Amino acid sequence: MSIDKHTGVVSGGAVSQFYRWLGAEWDKIDHCRDGCGIESVPRTRKGDLVTLTIGGNDLHMMQAHYLRVGLGDFVSAHRQLLRDLREANPAALILVGNVYAPQFPLDPRRLRLLDEANEAIRVNILEIDGRSIDIRGAFAGHEDRWLCKLIEPSYEGATQLAKLFQAAFTAG
Image (tube, rainbow, N blue to C red):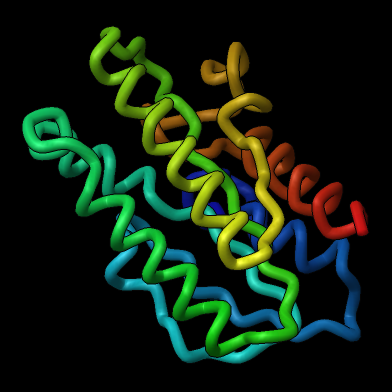
């Protein structure tokens, strides 16, 4: 979800905050890391709850490719990741966030690409009976406060991410 490193606060990332909210009866297995992409997410770990914010680094790093050829590769890789996670965790609650916009303005082509990617993410989540978290909608207009280093959640952003996941967890 977000790593502790960029928040400037010990255990300030969204995973750490959400874990504290869940309580001591939960075990945390945190695979968040800087620059993580779809292909590097572990797919065979087992759990009762899976939280995932993935795709932003993929879209950012490969935007020229996706603008040129479309999002087919992204959509397929994201869909396969969610399918693999569901297969490994058939009874788990899987919470998946979409991709927020960066701190800098996107031109119309990149905004369209982000919209298309988020729609594909939404459809992929429905396919595996997960719960969708609208991070982009929540962060819209707050990027200057909730992001740092252009694309990383700040402590405030990580706090908001954790709250979004808490709300989805309790939504029943």
